[in-house]
Length: 131
Image (cartoon, rainbow, N blue to C red; front, top):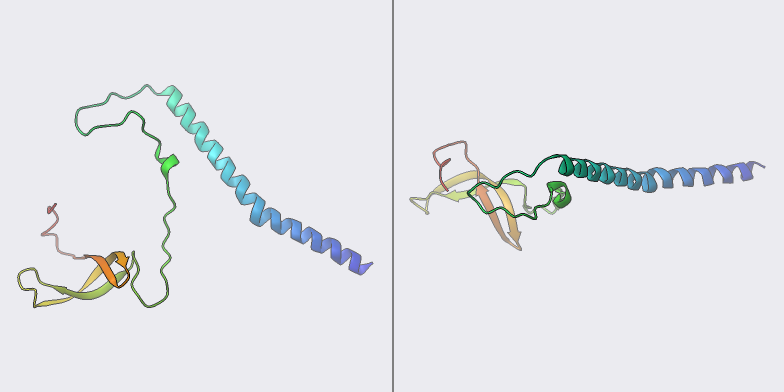
């Protein structure tokens, strides 16, 4: 009798785990998508189209940002090497004398094997208007 009850509880536990960890997130995502689509449909239907002004070319087949959104994640490898998104300290040469320089913080934005692409960080604002 006890083993039969334990088996029933185990079955219920598996059912609940499946519901919470697998089915509920799918249902929530589906509901969110339906809500966003409903909001977009009502917004598009009620607002008159805006006039296109002179300037940069604008496409007539634009798509709402929500439909193009991508997940952004930061998951560095814990291998001791710098990954994009990390700030590291490195030697940065002076522009006027490349033989001299000093350690500066650099934002790593790309990697190709052993070659890093980084942007120097600075608290100085004398380059703020540079293109």
